Image 1: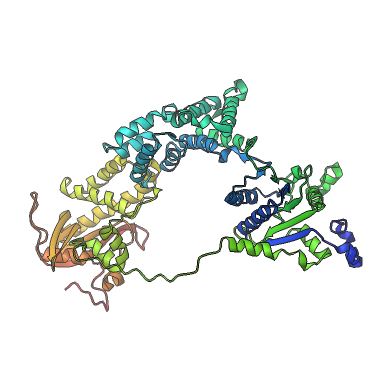
Image 2: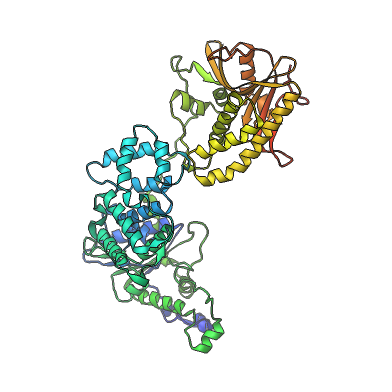
Length: 618
């Protein structure tokens, strides 16, 4: 040990060491490929050591992530290691539940933190838990898509008069203490009291049970006892940060129930303990030893002049900790060659050991091989490509024009949605999708035609009213409103310009159907114009990039052509005081609301009539 930890300026003495001074009896080295394999190997070493009666095992590591992995692997054999660091309060169920309530308040009941709170195991724990989760899952499906308006009022608007309304009123009553909490600064003690009251009501007081619950209760009581200058004014977001910071300083250590012969120590605790087998884990540079951070205030020479300890002193203390562990009867040193993202560098202490005693017998390949075999993968089996063949009775007899595009481009997606009835779900709190924006734009343009008579001055005010009434977050409205207004102004100007050329809009959002070999094709035309020569122009509004002419030629964007065929075959029959629309479709256009090549919002594009194109207006 003296030779290994000798100062660097004296390391030339290594070449003069006798063979007797290079002995490493009782030391093994395990170099795993990744941290999980390292933790698995450590767990195996512990399990083997426990077969010997009265044998004590100590795992020494400064890496808390690795310690957590080892604890998880040991539970395979019902071994609960006694961790000297305990469990941080924020990762315990009560601590996580309190933080979930606080985060809900800070984010003004956004869908993701609200569902996280409602799905927590402590929420309505007990006999009614199953019914509670059924309602929460229904709420989860409703909140898919763009974020609703802030606060619980936005959630209530999303629910509307659905059957979920009665349950929601009961659930909302549990959050009364924070439901109308002001967004401006309030006393920290008052904010914590409101959070604790909501957690108490939502969990039926289960949040305060157990050792972790009592620890959380003590912390809350300390915060409630603040008075005067010790009780600052904070916003809900600041209250969450303060609560999380204080929780991280609290550790929960069960007084009993852990294995009496297996312990996990930090470097400081390990100095005062002894064991028959000592496993020094995480021997990578930056972990053991930890690289000291530069002093932001004093240069190294200034620190030396002032008589302050050098920053490298912690490296020396880490070496002292390892030297004490190496003096045990049996020692295993472990490291992982890679961490979660990149290759690692072996600890300088491990490299010194291998330089002084280059003994290949130290490498423990047997434990590594056993760890890899323990979770060996099943043999690979070839799975044939899915080939669904629905029967005649299962096949769809009614198709929309957009579903035909999906059937041609992605038949498996069509099979999953229409045959297996497996609709896709949007993420919770998702960005506004093209489908969501398109639905709003189509409704605005439809009523602009039906109620406003294509009055250009009415289009933007109508759009602003619809956008103000939409149950979406104000940030989404603020970001999208300028783009929407610019694009709608272009539509109004383009419509007036075309009217001056004799082209007039005759209907919007017109539904129709026609039959092809026993299959009913249905569709809705966003806009149908009558050209000066009496023919029809089929227009499709796009809030995103329209399909290219190449896609149309390949048959993957059939919507416009099918709507034109529908008009020629009398598919737009008279109904609901709407006259029949029939005639030859001579023009097919996409009106996109995105930026054009010139940088302005809105442009018109046709996929037919291209040079060298097989598709023509004829």
